[in-house]
Structures are given as C-alpha cells and as structure tokens.
Length: 222
Image 1 (cartoon, rainbow, N blue to C red):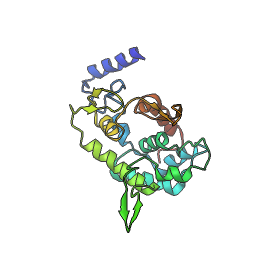
Image 2: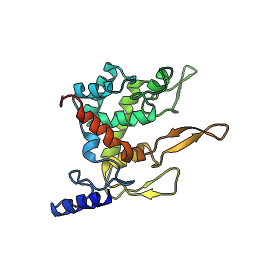
Image 3: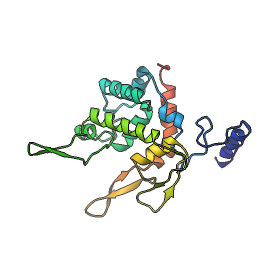
Image 4: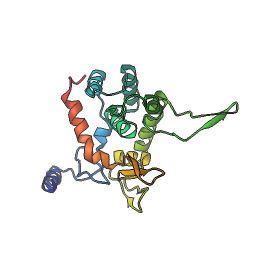
C-alpha cells in the first residue's frame, strides 16, 4: 500500500501535478485528505443512483426520496453518493439491518443535521430540521457552503482529541466542518457499557471506495 502510494506521488510529480489541492492528482488518503474534490462533486443519473440504492435489499428509501436527494445534490453540485454514504453512517437507511421499527426516527434524522435545534411556536416546541426533506435540503446546502468557504492553509481543531489538522483540500474541510472528529468511537449507556458507535471521518478512508466501486458497477451512466 505504501509503495503504491509512493508510486502514485512519483507519477504525479513527473506529470507536473504536485499540489495536493489539485483534484486531478490525488495524494495518499489520511486524516488530512479524506476525499477528493472530484468525488465530493461527482454527479450520477437518477436511474443509476436508484439501481445502486436498490442493490441494498433492506434499504428504507423510496424512489421519490432518492429522486429528491439526487435533484438537491445536482442543484448544489454535491455528490449524491457522498450524501447517501454519509447518511448510512448517520442513521442507516440505506443498508438497514435492524428492522423497520426505527423508520420514522431515521427519516427525521437522516443526516443528523441540526438535531437538537428547536423553536417554540404557540407555546409548543418543535424541531424545524427534522424530516427527510429538511435533512437533505439543509445538510446538502451546509456541505456546499463548507466546501466553498475553504482556503488552503486553514486549520481545524478536532473534537474528542487534542489534535489540530490542516485539511489538504476543500472536500476534507467540508467533511470536518460537518463532523469535527476522525476516529469512530463507542457510545456508552447508563451502565457504562458500549451501546453503539459514532462514526468518525475515518469511514471515508475505510469504506468510501467500496461504495464508489459498487455504484460504478451497476447500470449505465444515466
């Protein structure tokens, strides 16, 4: 793996592609480079995306939901595969493996955007960002804004650690602005025993290539 990475860097150097921020020359993935800018913005036709979703037998997404997600991502130039990947590790609607009883919970919290932000109207508290459409609309916009606000050299303090990193490209900055920690870690219940896991940004290094290969293997371009 390391030899392959060194070879890629060498080939990039001899081709005149030396800056990590150049999306045509992908450096070795690590904490400061989670995803290429090209992959962050890669678009797919609806038919291909729907076939990809259907390749997960237990997925909980409807055709209309996938259509809305694809259109919203197209409008903001954010990859729908990236959003589906992120959502899977937030709430698991793509590859559901624990039954349908949590469907409403997952739909309301699809991308975990603004979960605890509430408002009060007529004496009643409500959560304006809950619901599938709201989650997709606001999360995709947030990722786009994060991407556009990146300037090379910016630094990010990570949660759950004392680390400060310098993201190498806009996509990595956008991801850390949304989820500001790297390592996947357990959630502890009242008994101080692990009751689940919180996905950190290490998921992009471990799993994103598998999702990308899978969508490229189904259907046609459109």
